Image 1: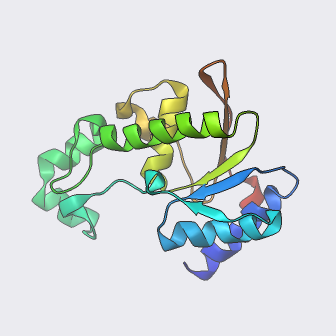
Image 2: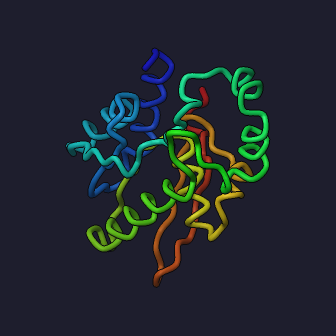
Amino acid sequence: MNENGIAQAHKIAQRLAAHKLAAIYASPLPRAIQTAAPLAQSHNLQVQETADLLDIDYGAWEGMAREDIRAKFPAMYEKWIHTPGKVRFPGGDSLRLVRLRVETLLQELCKEHLGETVVLISHRVTCHVALCYALGLPNDSIWRVRQDVGCINQFEERDGVYVVTLMNETDHLRG
């Protein structure tokens, strides 16, 4: 994580300082754990790692530049832009698999932390998928939900339905 990412992690912790948190869950990737660390420290909690919050596995696309992907996989690239729910990366995941992970995790956390506030720290596509799930949108809608780096989303479960109360909030990153 670079200096900017560390600063953003501290700003997230400051933004959530007044909230009573029951738990913090994060992807096991180092950048997610590093993002979670200041928040966990400020709330005297341990970061609980879960592979359910990992980003999508891009398979053969992993590490490739966008221009190279367009050249090598033109049809799949267009599908990823326009109908991402229909893409399965060669040697990797599909949004359906990511959504299954997220859906299962959220259902488990709702049972385990009924009435409590938990924080999930993940990655770009996984956050898009989680919000689409909470909003009842199909996976093809992921690019219609904006997610900036370091943003905060908030949703709660009410009688079996998720209600999004805050989305892509980044005021804490300014100034």
